[in-house]
Structure formats: C-alpha cells, structure tokens
Length: 120
Image (cartoon, rainbow, N blue to C red; front, side, top):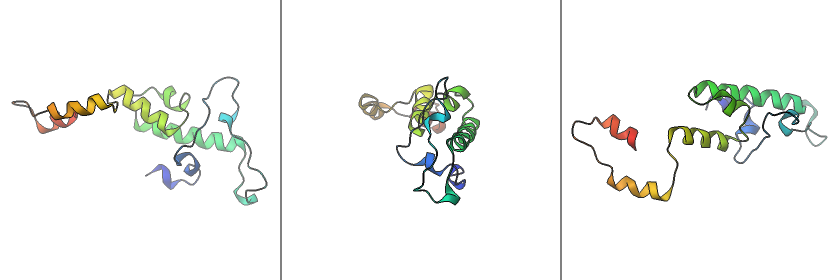
C-alpha cells in the first residue's frame, strides 16, 4: 500500500511489469526514455525511471531485512521475483504436495496457536 502512494512507483507495481538486473553492461535497468506518445509533462528519462525503481526496491529491502539487500535491489527483475526470493528464504513454496500436507497439521500438545500458525 505504501508504495502505491508514490506515483513514480506505480508502473513498477503493475502485474507482469519487468526490469533488468542491475549488473555491468545493463544501463538504466533496460528502461527507455519516454517517447512522443507520452505527454511532455509526464515524460521520464530512462535514468529517472531507473532511479525511481532503485528507490522503491530500497524501500522494499528495508521492510524485509532478512533477505540480502542485493537480492532485492540488484538481482530482482519483477515484484514476482522478489516474492519468490522471500518464499524461498522462508521455505513456503506453494506446491501441490505441500498443500496435501495441510490436512495432517494439527495442534500439538502444549503448542500455542501462534506456533501452529507459523507451521502453516
């Protein structure tokens, strides 16, 4: 929600939006300058877009300090890739086999409800 309040971040939050990794040989994360089809007041350069993306990724990294900052800021290519890194780190991949295991998860004796929830 917080990210959606900044209009500079809105393009990056759209479903399926992708960018390039921040590595040598890739300039401005693969962004291009806006063309004539974009209103002059709204036009942005590739450098401005890349700077806005870096700012947004930095904010995401601040909310998830357990994930390497470079994984989010430099190596991500979309919001989906960031979510995938988070899922991988915490070990909660969504697979059919894991979904079937949910039926076997029960509250153990002397286990708090919070602990059960964490196992889910």
